[in-house]
Amino acid sequence: MRTLRFHEHGAPADVLRLEAAEPPAPGPRQVRVAVRACGLNPADWALCGGLFRGALPRGVGLEVAGTVDAVGAEVDDTAVGDEVFGPAPFTGPTAGASDYAALDIWFPRPEKLDPIDAAALPMAVETAYRGLDALGVRAESDQGGRTVLISGAGTMMGYAAVQIALHQGARVIATAGETFAAALESAGALVTRYGAGLAERVQALTGGPVDAALDFAPPSGVLPELVRTVAEPSHVVTLSDPAAAGPLGVRTGAGLRMCHFAIPEYAALAAEGRFTIPVVAVHALDDWRAALAKSESGHARGKVVLRMRE
Image 1 (cartoon, rainbow, N blue to C red):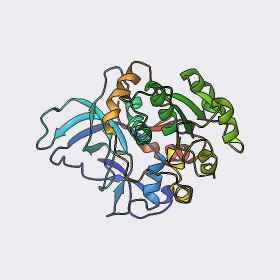
Image 2 (image 1 turned 45 degrees about the horizontal axis):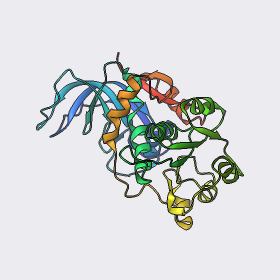
Image 3 (image 1 turned 90 degrees about the vertical axis):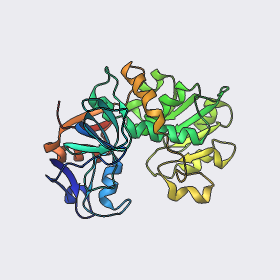
Image 4 (image 1 turned 30 degrees about the vertical axis):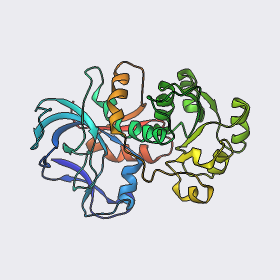
């Protein structure tokens, strides 16, 4: 099979290779899928740079949609031919940017959800839900008019977090640029711009501190501003700038419970047109360099997806 992977750490464009490899054999409680689409994320490029170092070679592509073509031992709820999607493991010699991928976690793909759109969901939904969950913003909670600030709502995780928090009944203030401001406002969020004076702008909208702040913005020194929007620094969680969090008393993603269980709910909403992760570009696997360039440009304005097969 074809697979996109690296044999040494470095810049993705320098170390990634599209090469032939044996398809993975599904282990116990795994399925193997013939990959139809694979979502790409900044985390893929961080893996190339040395994040979570381990045995090499290592594959990239952390989320997939595809057709089950083999099942491992102890799998009794999924059959060959089922259409599924989910996060792809990243610790093996191949991952999701391949013709075939073995999955530890998967969900039935709703019939009305295109494989491209399904492959854009898992990482954004799980990470966004995880951050909100840590702040007590949950569907089972009585939000009681809680106000949540989402910093970096123009990232795909931030964009997901705004929609999830609104769906759970919270009042949402989002920081975003012009690209997504109108869509976020249409969804029901109050939108303010990035940059100096953020705390004052938020307080002008709320008349006081927000109940929680969740940060997905690229590291830019925004955390002190976010701390000024809440009653206690522990009411802020950053999933993008852990290095700056400690001295401020801000919480990070360390130790937060994984929330893959949330993915099917938002996939169902996406199939109904009530939730979305924007897909900005779709490339063939052979055209992976163009996909990488788009993803790394800093101006992708949405998710980049590889299409392996129809």
